[in-house]
Length: 228
Length: 255
Image (cartoon, rainbow over all chains, first blue to last red; front, top):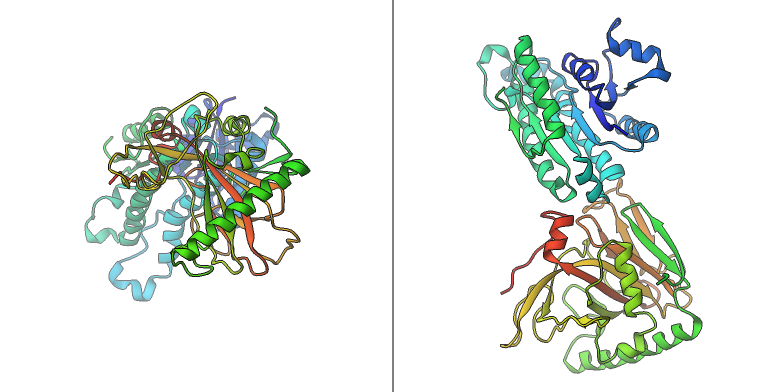
């Protein structure tokens, strides 16, 4: 049986590209929320032909624990295991300036929840339901987590971009990933973080995609990768 | 060897096993007699040494008496080499003979314990390995948890706890609400979302689990009657423990 990869943000730009890249080698579970997988793509075809699917699509709001639970239950019911998680889901908006947060900061908690807490909730439940008591199997399957973070979480950018809260959520995501990596060492589950900049350049995008794919198969752990 | 009694395996809150009807009637009574004799002797010793009634240790209220080569005969129905060997096979750690065993009697209203895993260093003094013979932890030579030398000629060697067994006996008429259960948790901190399971201290039943970084459990106060048990731990080398759960062992250094 092919390895099973749970991908969040599956209908986003990077998520969609990862679906195309990985669907031949992995059983993919693609989680999406508000944005629907685009018409005419390979993704949409899979939805239309569920009997022939290579990708299992699940719509879920990963800020809600009951949805996180449903995703894991459906994935395990369908495939019996989860070998890898790629967390792509994110609120990537630059909502405003931090100096104005008193008046327009309602987005603060939701952006942190989506970008920082939700991936940890999902990984925590997969650990509980699938990885906890089987370190030998985890080692054999080379199980891993890839957190898609951002360059913004590593460096402070010029003020006009207004990305303070987004950047802070990604910085928090990076440090949580480092702790998670240490906590999962006894379980033989690897955790890494990818911190890309803008993905508009196709050559750069390809490098990022290949880096993510290689993290699933190699032995890297506890790495924050930002140079491509 | 076939495991005695009726066994069940459970996945939640972490993988563990329970069994009932573990010993036959005569074996149970023999074990219970040995248990009672040891507890009476130990209680007399503790009181003579100035311990307060019902508060014998700083954080743990049970009267504890070690099972060793001197008194193993009384407990041999339960603690047999072939049985412990079978337990090792169950958790895929071949038994090496190293055992730490004791009887525990919690007086009425013993304090609830703290959540812990049992997955820690365990120090044996210059252990010898003879085929099909137990090597018990000798706590008079070195501290079992820290490896601290208690005698000049001590030669502490570090191992790791790998399996915990709790056998319940002498808890006649126990009912739900009496307390004294062993509680299993799926996390190190208890909240309203924590998965828990209460293991009743019913006579002639046992709980067994692999010690791991997440084998969280604790004792719950007993509010109606004393709670009695025999507990023992299997051990493996630190290297084997680290291979299975890298960096997961709560290690102590010999002092």
